[in-house]
Image (cartoon, rainbow, N blue to C red):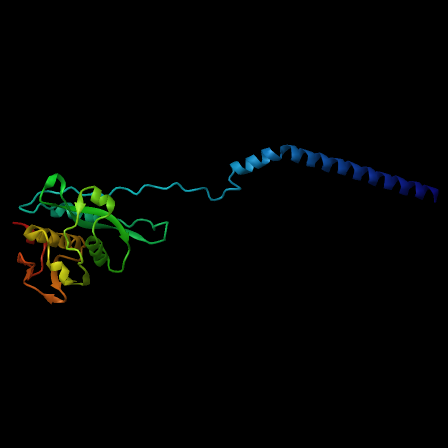
Length: 243
């Protein structure tokens, strides 16, 4: 009996000693953690644990890409090969990160008036919202006019203010484009009317399914456009503007 009591006493003593050792070890660990707290926090910050979404630097939008053009007759324009190459090189680009709008590159035709010339047709590559009617989207972008960067690069539109594209269909390679009556009146006379038509025809025929363009005004076919009497009684092609 006395031996059992002695054994129990020794067992309790060992347990108490082990507890004291464990307590000392935990105290030492806590002391080490406190001493190294700042260093650990700095390491975590360096690993971006506390900053999972670092600020994104603002990017400057690229300047417009304007295709080189070549003078042709009274109204200089790009050659067919230059425009065809520009249209074929258009590729879909990633979605806009700001509003998730999917964008595609389009070949838009404007007028370059560098060096006080009468006007040269300029092909501008621009990203526009993707649409079920890509030709109509491209034409509406041309009607809306140039961006600030395109204007700064020397481009402008000669399509009359207030012009609206009321409808667009393609039948057997002919794009039938219906405009409101604002499209009829160009303040720049005969030359301005020609360039206005070229903007539309060259933009539409950049699409492989379109060979020519028939202009309608308020759903009606007209023989002539504007006070200068530019003939639009038949579908227009790029060759229609060659002398």
